[in-house]
Length: 122
Image (cartoon, rainbow, N blue to C red):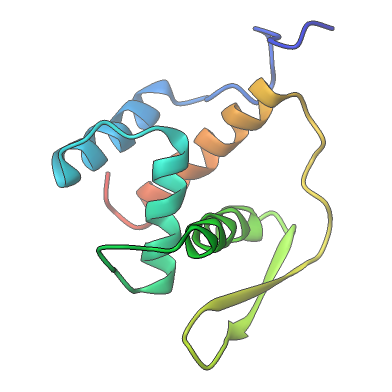
């Protein structure tokens, strides 16, 4: 099985939705985002806090919050509350599917599109 399997079941089903997300972020922030930048933005959105500068560990934590939020509906994570600083915390319920890198990216893009649609950004 090739690493970049073009027939992956996790390719973005709604390509226009992915482009709509990228357009929205570009129009809002002035830069065309990659998937990591979008995860970072989702994490900030979920935290409800914006700072001009984030420490490296905070950025990683924000991206982790985004992943948890995106996979919560599928039962992979469960929101357990916020800590005293307002940071959301999740518990692992079941592992995220172990798929090839390209499939992971497609699955994340699908989840991001759904998130942006649910938040009515696109």
